[in-house]
Amino acid sequence: MSESENYALAVNGEVREVKDAWLGESLLYVLRERLGLPGSKGACEQGECGSCTVFMNGNAVCSCLVMAASAVGSEIATVEGLNPDGTLTDVQEAFVSEGAVQCGFCTPGLVMAVHHLLEENPDPSEHAVKEALSGNICRCTGYGRIFAAVDAVVSVRKEMSR
Amino acid sequence: MPVQLPISLSSAIEMLANTPNAQLLSGGTDFMVEVNFNHRHPEHVIGLRNVKELQQWSINSETSTVYIGASVPYSTMETGELAAALPALAQAARTVGSPQIRAAGTLGGNLGTCSPAGDSLPVLSALDATVHLASVDGERNVPFNEFMVGPKRNSRLPHELVSGVTIPMSTGFQGYAKVGVRNAMVISVASVCLALHNDAVSVALGSVGPTILRCPEAEQWFNDLGAQQLTDSIATEFGARVSAESRPIDDHRSTAEYRRHAVGVLATRLLQRGYAQ
Ligand SMILES: Cc1cc2nc3c(=O)[nH]c(=O)nc-3n(C[C@H](O)[C@H](O)[C@H](O)COP(=O)(O)OP(=O)(O)OC[C@H]3O[C@@H](n4cnc5c(N)ncnc54)[C@H](O)[C@@H]3O)c2cc1C
Ligand code: FES
Ligand code: FES
Image (spheres, each protein chain N blue to C red):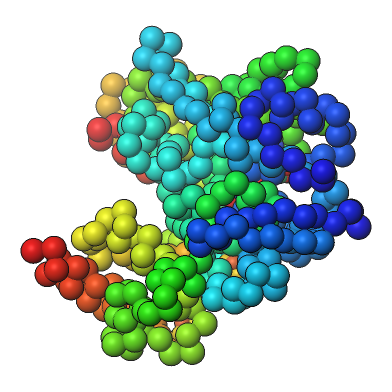
């Protein structure tokens, strides 16, 4: 075992100290077990399910595949940081109202992926939505309610920008 | 400091020379899976995330080549100028994993892993790309087809890192096709890159041999024909010859028989696409 690592990460706009960590720890592990941010979920730990999706320098990535100690100097944003006051974002509201949450395990990762998609493409085609969410697995809903939630956000946002 | 994060190429190669057991980390999409599953136990890591030189890419219209730095992610190759210059690479990039994987995964990492299923590799092979290796001894340039020497084996020396690749643009069509069990998030069962350059065809196969395979006999046969028009029988014969040059095995993803068949079908299809353009 190598010596322990001390470093600081920029998470949700705050500097967070990480002490006595092992260098191989994933960002997912550090967020959940060391920084008290359990919103990002861990299921596969091999990049397949997307439940651990966070933003790193504005890109949606799997936090299970980021070596935490290598994320020093990068801007990390988690589901907890979407609305820092703890209220729900429009995407989260739509997931609730459209019935896109069943067991909820995939929800934080999907919410992050949807926010990222709509940031890049405010009016995505059905195909673009499916491609953008292809890295997020949901075992409960069958995806129909999730696509309905995305559609709902898109139309509300369109309405508001009119 | 066991995790080092250089910001320049010169400091990265300096660190690598000074820490012989250091492991290179780019997007982490292969590396961290191995760490998470206890198959890799790094003690020193050089993270290349912040090295500016490795993030660069450029298109040189004079030499008709594209340079892509080792840390450029797949998401950059999928669309825009790079995709227009290298459509086959864009198609290959788009089949990698999921958007999250494509935002993190890089060419440097695909070359570092050198799996016969690596999706960028048949493209580098068919287009005769050159791999650039950097070390304190200077730069070494190795044709991709000599760089990969076996399954997950390449000719990189321990004190070298992949800094980038130079890829010639083809004068004609180029395309990439892949077979897997579904559309998203799938490692290839068989894949083919085909390019038409100065009226000659080149074709490279993934997942059907210990390395990426070029098909010199099928290429030669087709090029000697000098066909002005592509008939169905020529396209089918070409596919059969490509199949004959594959060297697939049975494994948990598929059978040798299916793979041999699949690369033939994909090669025929890509050739027809090339001539339909
Ligand atoms: C869910 C999932 C799906 C995937 N799907 C695909 C797919 O469809 N097609 C495909 O081809 N791959 C796939 N992969 C594998 C992986 O994403 C690719 O091989 C990717 O290109 C690796 O790049 P990286 O930057 O993440 O490399 P890393 O994981 O950082 O590194 C990979 C290896 O290369 C070495 N390395 C890294 N950078 C350099 C360098 N500059 N010089 C020398 N060595 C270096 C590392 O030491 C390591 O051994 C998938 C992976 C996951 C987790
Ligand atoms: S836990 Fe990271 S993708 Fe599944
Ligand atoms: S709601 Fe259960 S996995 Fe998606």
